Length: 208
Ligand code: ATP
Ligand code: MG
Image 1: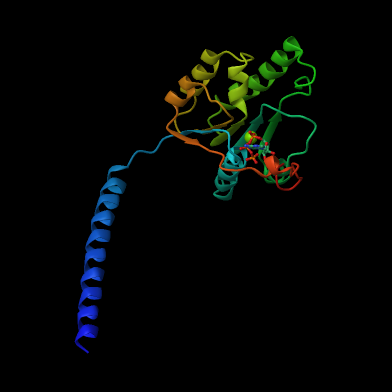
Image 2 (image 1 turned 90 degrees about the vertical axis):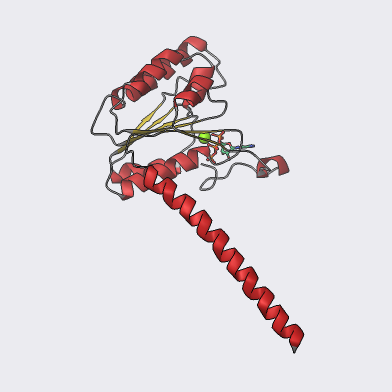
C-alpha cells in the first residue's frame, strides 16, 4: 500500500518536473517567435550527397502554389528523362525552363555545354528580375558554377539584386561556399544509405 503511495508521489513529482521543463522550452521558443518579425525573400540552398534535394525544392514550390503564389522552375541538368513534377506543376501555371539538350555528360563538348548552361541561366536571370514571380527553383544550379559553365559573380549579382520579397531555392551537390554564405537557409542532405547501392535502379514515379 505504502509503496504504491510512494510510487504515485514519485510519478507526480516526475510529471511536475517534466511540465516545468517543457514550460521553459515553450517560453524560449515563444521569445524567438516574437523576435522573428522580418519578412523577406529567402534564399534556400539544399545541398549534400543524400537523396531529397530536388524533391524538397519541388515540395516548396508546390507549397507556394497551394497558397496562390506564382512560381517558376529552371532545371540545369536534363538528360532525356521525364520529370514527374513538371507534369503536375505546368498544369497549374508554373513556368518551366529546361536546359537544352546540348548538355549531356556523354558528349563532354565543353563549348556546347557552356552555351546550354548560359541559355538556361539567361532564363533564370530574367525570372530573378521579375517582381511578379514569388518563388524560383534553380534545380541543380550548383554544378554549373562548380564546372565554370556559369560565372560565380554573375550568379551572385543576380541573386543579390533580385526583388526583395522573392524566394529562391538552389539545389545540387557541392554548393559553392560563396552561395552558401549568401543564403539565408542551408540544409545538407546526408546519405545514410541509398537503394542504388543495393542494386535498385532509378524508378519512374519515385526517383524522377
Ligand atoms: P531527388 O531528385 O530524388 O530529390 P536529389 O535531387 O537529392 O534526389 P541528385 O543528386 O540530384 O539527388 O540525384 C538525382 C538522382 O540520383 C535521383 O534519382 C536520386 O534518387 C539519385 N540519388 C540521389 N542521391 C543518391 C545517392 N547518394 N546514391 C545514389 N543515387 C542517388
Ligand atoms: Mg537533384
